[in-house]
Image (cartoon, rainbow, N blue to C red; front, top):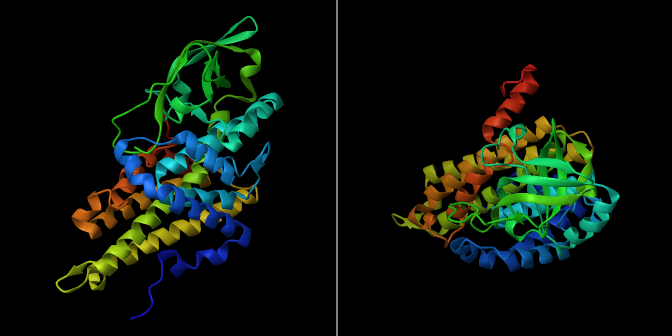
Length: 390
């Protein structure tokens, strides 16, 4: 019998990554395996996550805002950030979501669009995990169409007063600062909102069947008064929040491959040990066909992610290319998770194995930060020149 290879060994993808980025990946992988994975089933079952403790650990590891420059951020390559997201999501999508929202949404918004005062005040604390950030764009009735948001900001002397609600906000009820997007007359502006401001509350969303090891909240802004300096000076219009979403979607392109890899490696191990009719399940043609097809899609997704990482490191990555990656890799990752569950049979539905947990989480990743339909229309617009959103 030939020595078995792992799926990505078969593709040789490590040869496409430089040594520094591989070292960062391996550090994150060890941390997830040693410090996080032993607790994931318990956290998922209980519907909880020790977000503050994890944020401090991840800040010490250097992964919060790791692809940003200065202000205590590590300044790594985009590819290294992507590989870190892959290893985090190999643990759980909720873990990667914590890091994505912190670094690519809250921190990136302040880093890219904020004032120097806002950067100095928040970025070092967020990078260290001493503070947690969230990103308030989505509303209950306005997800794919953020331009319709009802949250409003009005001038009152030198101050701003915010009223409205945001929905499905990761980190919301544990956040120290929220980047909130609101309508100001005929345009959208961003605001840096300390969560201890009077009128701000963030009730947790419970009874979730997906992303259970993640903090998900509603944001309520009831006459929240902020100084004039709270506005993000570099963002005016929807291009501001959409640029942040592009950053976060890039991490998802890599991240979901971690969930898929974890499912596939679990299925390979199980099939090698489980005996059916006096021989290993892995020795049957139908099982090998499933494993081969899933390996093919995982490897293709990895090659696509690494290509997009090179483009981002070169400064040439376009939003529609990120849509290609998000659409393909999430779609294939959830298909892999579901197929792996069939190999594990009844064992696949328990928290003894990670497969159903990943599958359930990917149901959320499939629709957040741009549904598959939205990304199809982004790609369609790039191909045809015609917008089909309206």
